[in-house]
Length: 322
Image (cartoon, rainbow, N blue to C red; front, side, top):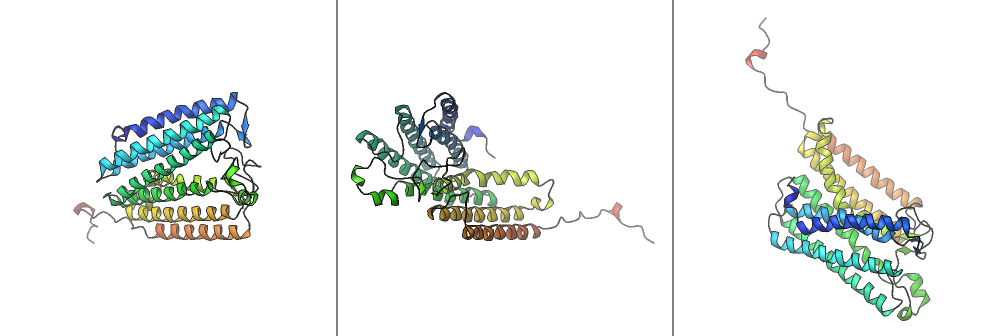
């Protein structure tokens, strides 16, 4: 792995700033008892700050894997920093005002901030797409690393793209009409209003679908799939099949396919207005099929390991003549 000193410096600095912001938001969670849309008002900047730390640090490392288009990659990294910073500033401004940052069209100022946030998210997504295309075109020697990096980025782009589904009017908002004068346009939840009963920590709805679940799972493929590359060699001394590079590659293939299937499954579940923690029989059956496919593929990958070849005998190792 390349030295962290060669990583994209603005992304690393921004990640450090977001770590500080996460601490500030954690203090806000303790000392500020305001609640907005059923959640502590500082919960959103805390979650976004933590997410940006992981997201930007991973991109900073991935940019070191480029073998062509390094200059374009650096500029795309700059754009990620600028748009991410803009989004965090807008979120924090609304927290300090005691107002919603997302979907807020109550006043012309709120509408302008929400519109600016939507535009920065679109540019952030496009900059990440540029990095993904550059990595797809780059020659990465280790095939397992190449697959984990590219697969993680593509799944993360799909997960991030789900955020655009939240910006449009929900079915309930369309049914209510008067969208031109509505205070809120857009929602995280599907089938129920935002702000109802929710899971602890994540805040995802427990009474309806919630698009934040697949959005979160998809975006963090960016970290989890490359982390698999670290785990497999560490386990190799204890588990002989993992010493085979071919086995590691096949396991990464299984992980990428399984992760993509998981994202599709929970997206389908959310769009059907079903809570993540209360799946119906159809969802459970689909989950069981995905799990069975992953288990079978993993078993198949492990059983095809090339056995260790015995070292050739030397003259001293020959059996004595009878």
